[in-house]
Length: 369
Image 1 (tube, rainbow, N blue to C red):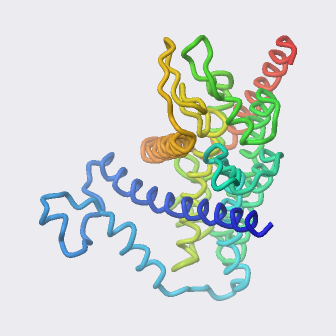
Image 2 (cartoon, rainbow, N blue to C red):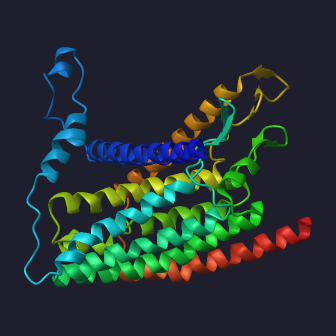
Image 3 (cartoon, rainbow, N blue to C red):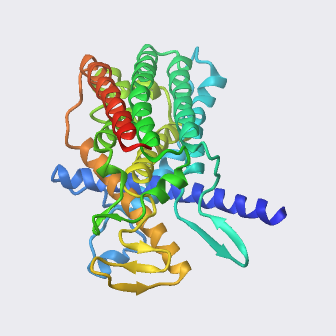
């Protein structure tokens, strides 16, 4: 019993550390990536001992992004405006971040491995109804945003909170329709089983990934997920040209950092969900429990631990690619107007999602499953 609790605690800590480090990496990529897109240098001033310049290497801005800027932000004054609800003003950022972090608990980052006689599933928590848990926890995040806008006693913050509430609730419906289509296709609510169902190949060469059977759901979940993360082109709740900074206008210091961290954690969450549902999760094409079996029958034997490690690496490579895709979209497309945003959600994504569900059910019935 103690060993099981210890293993569970270690898995939870590992997943949390991976998420937090991934958010820091995304912050760096956003700053340097946006600079490249806009033909700027980007963060490049801070360094340690000037080692990069001495070795003839460019200053990549890692010290700026991962050390100097966070220290500056966390040491700023924690300002609370007059008339604000101090308790809710303090609580809101953590209500926004906490649901995102706990959602990662059910994401499988790899297959089960056996260590010292203990079978360890590379998933912090397996609830068997993981898909429902994901939809439930994502929906809770709106409370932190709405409370942050209301508790600040600022009309721009309040308007940003109202916009965020309407936007997130609207696009949760489209996201739910996409997830239901995936659940119907694989016949299970378990994310681990969905990953396992995507193992093997069709026609001797095509991976059995969900994107090939549910391409519409993939695009829906990608669009709805980006809207849930409230980033360009869906950043109406914090549109600086209209609302200063929206729902976190009156936030500074560590609480502002938590709101910013929430945005990047949501980007990572959407990426891992897309990877799990549509890109095979930890599955590597042509990799089975005993090694690679390539088209043509070529077999390359591998040990069990090596297969598990390759699966974890595959999962994070897919996740990073999808994170980078979202950041590139954020610096490429212009912002929607608010009426366009709501119209896109209710008059396009929702009808398309319903049609996709009907088509999925029709195919399942024809196939006799």
